[in-house]
Length: 133
Image 1 (cartoon, rainbow, N blue to C red):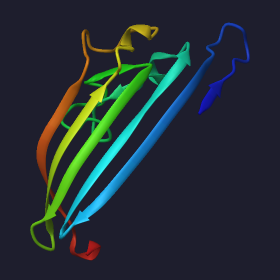
Image 2 (cartoon, rainbow, N blue to C red; image 1 turned 30 degrees about the horizontal axis):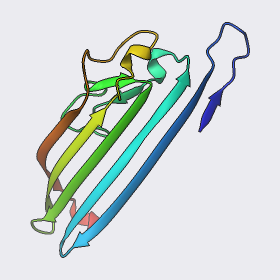
Image 3 (cartoon, one colour; image 1 turned 90 degrees about the vertical axis):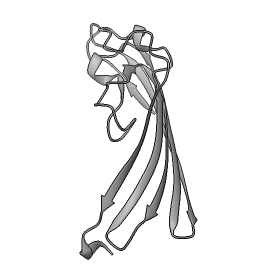
């Protein structure tokens, strides 16, 4: 939780709340992991303070903020990592994100129009160096 107090009356005031939860389960040699994160901002914010949805730490397969941005967000990431050998792991993932229809509340609307929910679905291969065994 964060509270922004202006030093001058013409500066922005806001309250920000963020949360993050994750759980991993080992299924034989494979690992199933799920993450849920989100947050909300109440008050006036600068556009760069909005939650950006998309990118490697949010909805993979999209650029940073390409899914949307807003004063609220909810992101869910799920992946199944299956080792193929000692140096190569396949990762199947499904990521979902939404600005919870809050992009219209930004000072400068950077969010995509009529954006409710976007998903990234894919397959990635992770090559581990031998020193990371």
